[in-house]
Amino acid sequence: MKYRTLGTDPGTRREVSVLALGTMLFGSATDEKTSFALLDRYVEAGGNFLDTSDNYAFWADGGQGGQSEELLGRWRRSRGVGDEVVIATKLGARPLAPGTGYVDNPEGLSAKAIREAAERSRDRLGVERLDLLYAHIDDHTVPQRETVEAFAELVAEGTVALLGASNQAVWRVERARALAAAAGLPGYEVLQYQHSLLRPRTDIPDGLFPDGSLGHAGPELRGYLRAEPGLTLVAYSPLLKGAYTRPDRPLPQDYDHPGTPPRLAVLREVARETGASVNQVVLAWQLGGELPIVPLAGASSPAQLEENLAAVGLELTGEQRSRLDAAH
Image (tube, rainbow, N blue to C red; front, side):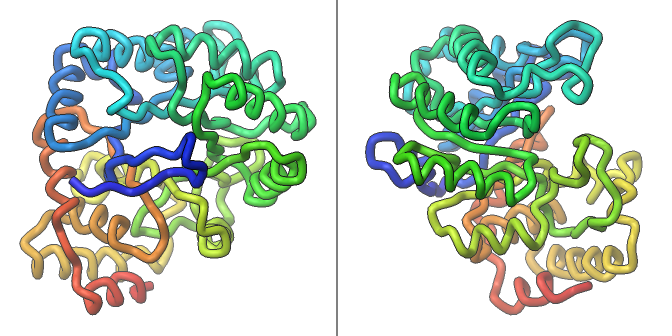
């Protein structure tokens, strides 16, 4: 396994494995026995960066979520896991009532909601301090200063280490970080957005977020990362939920454009040249690029996890990387 550093403050920064394990469906679609086996194998391989959210997986039973965090808490206790494993969770998008969703009825990012949600997450996970806490979605109904100050209070109290944001417009992330910096408060240091080798159209809202396709790490966000070396991108759905390799998993509609076939063709060429799988090439492309990217890949079977873990050791040549970057 290889590792990179999240954060810049010596008191809160963490060394994490370059491949994060998504646990969104652990405790719901992925049963406890399988989930525990995947977690055990990931840690055995040197992995130490787990990702969850307080609303995973509310859609599975029409509830409010919490199954993933609860399972991770049970696994931690049963295995005696401590600070050596970094667990990132998110708040802000938990439905306030069963049968509702995060678009129409989210917990939001008020000071009260942040404090209460963070406490519930700590209880479910069985930890005194959340290693990394994200604002899961934006909340335009609350002044950003209130949100920034509420997160900073948790850091000051020692119940949260690192802060992050996901699925927000870049200008909103920058405004929040500027507010924090001006006040001498900790701000977002980790950004989580969907990112993969294939590039989506930006003129089609993805349907998940009320203000458009804010879930994608587009050119503006990638430029922001280049300009702010203290930031790290955690890239979710790098394998597009199996769409690279599974005929039963078609690409989302926003990848239906003339640039997709050429990139897929080069991807398959590089896979043949390296003897690796298409998925492994995608992960290796992210891992070895110029931007600080941690791929966040889920797994529902041991075979999927082993395939992903093997990508950490795959080194693409400069020429192969150039071809992948240039295809359009």
